Image (cartoon, rainbow, N blue to C red):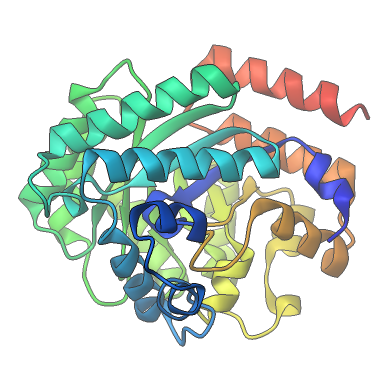
Length: 330
């Protein structure tokens, strides 16, 4: 891998806490687990679809059910951010997935929020949190998740998302929760246009009205949708390797990242699930440099657009954009 990408400061907006458990962190919680088992059960590079990808996350979630485990996982992700030279990130997780050993949803968010604040202050890496509902959740579970965000208003919990199996479950259960979020001035993003086509993105924009779309790559299948995205400055959180692992695309050359960039869409470059996709942000940048001839100026432009679309405060946006410009020195 070209070390030039390691040295570039980066912004990441789409990364799932439960999809990034490293082998080193896992060994701290289970000293008996072998590297072979980790590679077979936690890494999803043999996936045939999004459902397979999600199964790997289910395995990791077994080790994210206590205060100690959650703190280890947060520490681990910060270590990964440091290696990638990430200076701002938004980490997402579904609080209701971490209740199997007695924690309450409020306790889960507080543990992750407090540990994130603690390490942010020490490391200088700015990290905010996005809480997820899931496609298969009930209306009440989605509303409960939004209310958790309201409870942590003013802290580092800054947004609401819907994730999981896009193809298997409709949006109708979640419309009320997204309306509550919007009425409460909570930033919203939503997974769409990954497992399903452009119509899924259109439906999501119409029913949930997010300002960002997680993935959204299949928007390119509909020209009128592309015009809508551009007109409303809808940001697309792109995850190249993840899209390859889940078989959205068979070949990198078919991925629309370069088309979207060259046509001045608002996009970010992200890992999605670092462990499941067996990637990191340095690797994603290397792919863009190797396969699409991106150079420092391309990465700077995308990082600035990422920060502009972030759910950070105005002061944080200005601070990170200034830092990006100074470190890229173009």
